[in-house]
Amino acid sequence: MFLVLFSIFIDIFFSHSNWLLQFRQKIASATSAIKSVFGQEETRPDAADKLEKLRERMVKVRELFRDTDSTEFVIVTIPTVMAVSESSRLRASLKKENVPVKRLIVSQILPPSASDCKFCAMKRKDQSRALDIIRNDTELSSLELIQAPLVDVEIRGVPGLKFLGDIIWK
Image 1 (tube, rainbow, N blue to C red):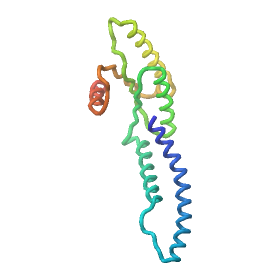
Image 2 (cartoon, rainbow, N blue to C red; image 1 turned 90 degrees about the horizontal axis):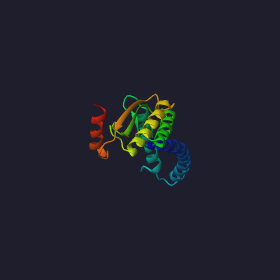
Image 3 (tube, rainbow, N blue to C red; image 1 turned 30 degrees about the vertical axis):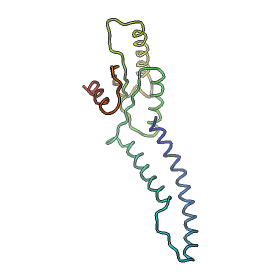
Image 4 (tube, rainbow, N blue to C red; image 1 turned 120 degrees about the vertical axis):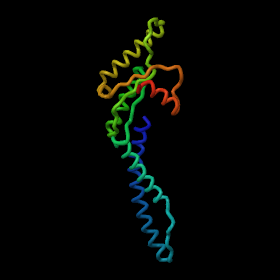
């Protein structure tokens, strides 16, 4: 979701920054003419220069997100109907922005058990339904589906990602 919001921000920023830079150029031309009458030259960098540099960096970031040789966006979700629906919308938005997505990780999958309690049986049934929705979803079904089991620790930070990576990338 962050990437979609970032992309929208870039679009809005570009449209407004172009207008702002054009307006600034008109003002700068008028100001320069007035200053030249009084023999003054402005040599220090101004906000417009900083804005232009920021704009150039944002273009590079956008290009990086779309570069299949150096970037892969992996969608990670949990097996609930709502989360799968959000992931489907995210995939559609990323596709619209030409951001490459090849994989979908579904985490917190309950491991198989010979003796399910009533709660676990219902939870497993709900997860199975969410996985079926993924397999039939027009946005998600083409992605490589990777199932990550529910583990007894919260996955946070680089050590947590390495731990989970060791489990799912065997």
